[in-house]
Amino acid sequence: MEIEVLGPRKIITFMIGDTEIAISETLVTGWIVIAALTVLLLWLTHDMKVVPEKKRQVLAEWIVDFFEKTVIDSMGKKMLNFAPYIAALFCFALFGTLLSLFGLRSMTIDINCTGTWAMITFVLITYWKIRTNGLGGYLKSFTEPVFVITPINILSEVATPLSMALRMFGNISGGMIISSLIYAALTLLSNAFYGLIGIYFEHFKIFQIGIPAVASIYFDLFSGVIQSYVFIMLTMAYVGDAAGGPQEE
Amino acid sequence: METQGMTLEQTTLIAKAIVLAGQGIGAGLALIAGIGPGIGEGYAVGKAIETIGRQPEAKSAATSTMFIGCAIAESTGIYGLLIGLVLCFVNPFLKHLTV
Image 1 (cartoon, rainbow over the protein chains, first blue to last red):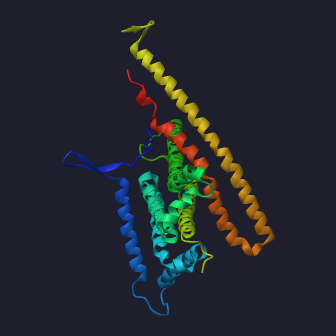
Image 2 (cartoon, each protein chain N blue to C red):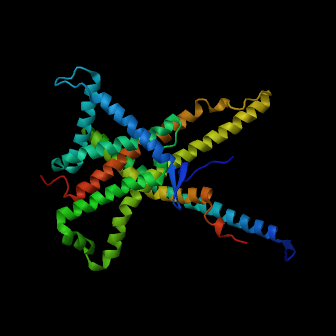
């Protein structure tokens, strides 16, 4: 049995001049998630009142409160305008990962996706470090505590986005591979069962009902939510640290 | 073409088998990296439970910090897992085997 594992599937390929342009599945599902989130948020926030009448406004206010509280807790009050980015990143990561519940490939199985998010975080960290300490202070921070340690400091600076990207990618893709192995094993088991009773269904595998859902609860739901949460928590921790930490108020 | 009583196809097949066996062993060894995070996360969760037992009012803070700590501790294990997956499914060394 062939199990396709690494690398995003290319949906459309076309040529511009001599270069081949490929549109991957990640890109398409990403735009689907963006569209779905836009529709969802427009529905949640339209027709709002000062005193909430509808449940959806309460839900929307709860979401905003949650992200503002999280940002204030870990980054301090002065970084409150960071909350929309954190909320957007979390929703995008969460819905992009939970796509696998609808039978699509999760966006976060593609290292290009998590790598992009990690690089945005890296740019933010560097920006805030330079803004807090000045360019000279930023460059000087590499030579602390002693000058000899500079290569290690540079390495640890690069390791931050790399580990963030690989953590999310590895967790979700590992879960996806284990899920597909479970499906393959259940297909073989069903075929053996069909051989035993003498009836054969091509597209209906009896043991694939229900059993993969148990694994899916951990590998898709739990893993996806925790990893998205950890991703925003790490982003906030690193950027908040670069901006001076929450204690300075 | 004969090389020591074997045809070229047979030699290539044996070479491929050796490469694949090495990859399998390597993938297995890479997953030894799972030991460290297992111990570390168990320790972290144990300490978090201790904290909650001693200070039940700190439950939410302890839980969220524990999850983040676990996720960070997990990354070395995930590096091992990635190496194992690449060795199993991508076969990176097989393409160096040219005839």
